[in-house]
Length: 139
Image (cartoon, rainbow, N blue to C red; front, side):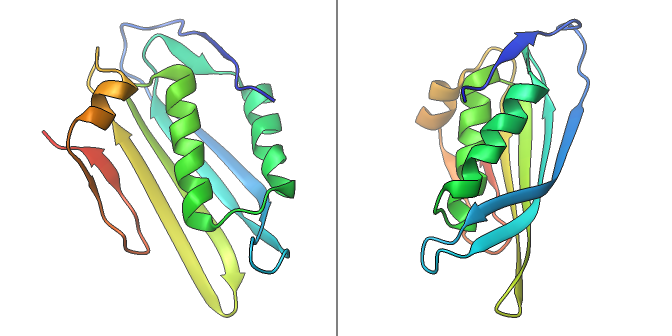
């Protein structure tokens, strides 16, 4: 299902929207077994906000998709930024233990007002490939 948006009722105000999906599931591409975790999305909208019902169905689609933790966290961030062009956005994937190990991914997209996603991608991005991953626009 496609992500839907609606007009921000207060586009002149910097406020934060926080969304939790505590029952996120996807499939391990190596084993085919289910992966469980929580997705937390925090963003400051610009002109558009994410419609929650479409977000729920978008996230449910991952239940049958073989994808690694790192990839799913980044894909969610990329898709949400493309859908609503927020001023700032962070997506955290907090996954349950698999094989006795726990992983936490934190993907950030810091966008100044008036800068679109293509501008951000053309700029210098720093990406740390640690268990806590952060991608952000350099000042």
